[in-house]
Amino acid sequence: MSQPYTAPSLKAKAFNCPHCNAYSNQTWVMLANLIPQNNPYWIWGNSLDISLCAHCNTASLWVKNTLVWPTAILAPIAGADMPADIKNDFDEARSVLAVSPRSSAALLRLCVQKLCIELGEPGKNINEDIGRLVAKGLSPKVQKALDVVRVVGNEQVHPGTLDVRDNPEIAAKLFALVNFIVDDQISKPKLIDELYQKIPDDKLKGIKDRDKPKV
Image 1: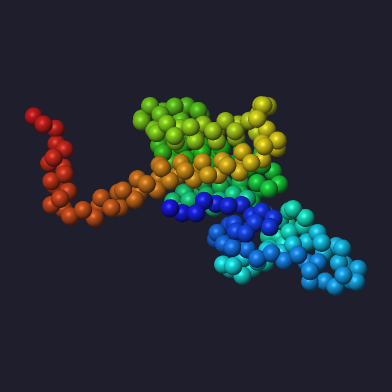
Image 2: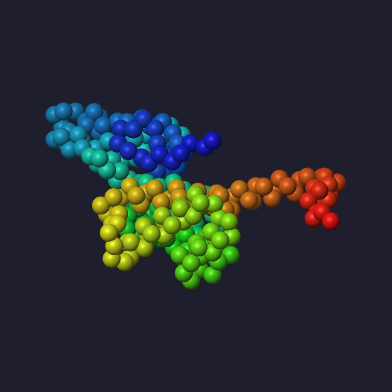
């Protein structure tokens, strides 16, 4: 089972590196410890921390409690099987999460709308698309994930009661839901099909014969 995404946080012993994205141990250095106390910049250095990734050996710069370099990415990367056009929107949502969770949530709603098209729906009305998928036997968990992203995203572009500016962690959690949908509806069926095709022809014939309607 893969390590869940862990966002960078000040003084944490390990998290997903904002440079290489690997979950890795971090070594911390306060800049003030590198400056003599009689240096006028020593006090300024108390506000600066450096985290060094054990995986890529690259440093990140923190000012007080905020990661300032590289630009904070607080969300997991897109699943490997996410379609390219949807991945572009997903990556854009990741890039703006730290500065605009509302924009991020709205972009993820767009990802879900495009995923509905990928799953064979028209894509004109996302609520109706989800309803049709449910009628076709969509898993209740996937339905819930789709509707969470849909509703939260809608609330950011229309007057509503759920404003992720008050709860930015909600926007961050939507990324995991979009990845879950892709994994359930695209990655797992793809894996099953790939393995099924490796079954010998005589065994496949036996399966087909077994499953023929009985007269």
